Image (cartoon, rainbow, N blue to C red; front, side, top):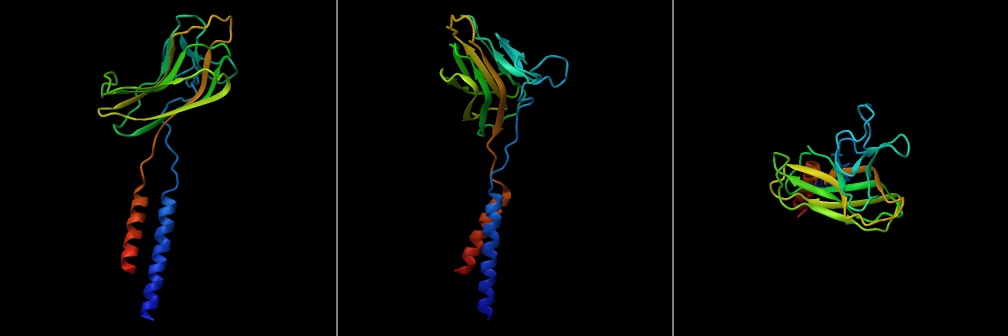
Length: 211
């Protein structure tokens, strides 16, 4: 009878630990690291793209309705520009995913369009290793496009800076040459939870007791 009770306890413990581990290992919702990922006019002062910066022939508008977007004006040879966000704390060795969630690339666009991550030291100005910038090849063109890249922050990273930029405009068309980004996302790959580690440890102990 004692052996039966011990066996039942062992089985129940194993079932509990396995279930606990499975629940704990379920995907976690990654925290959005961008402020104002939709380029909106959050302070309602009439200017879109609050908390973002821009340079060159780029900016923030609401040309297509009430929602904001980043505008990349690739309609003149020689144009260049981009949009970016500073002040995002980063961790060296962490993996980050930067996504452009809703992009319009017009049919005559012809330029080097790129996006990715820059890494900076504690002053948010001095580079911490090489940047990870990837190209967006044309085609595709159209509406509702999306692009994603992932990279691991190098040693010395204290800030991560997402950026969308372009240069080398070659189009000489008379219109439909620009690109617009209506939404973006920056997340860090979540770490395994302590509950999952405890569940794995408990399963190991349960197996050891049955030997």
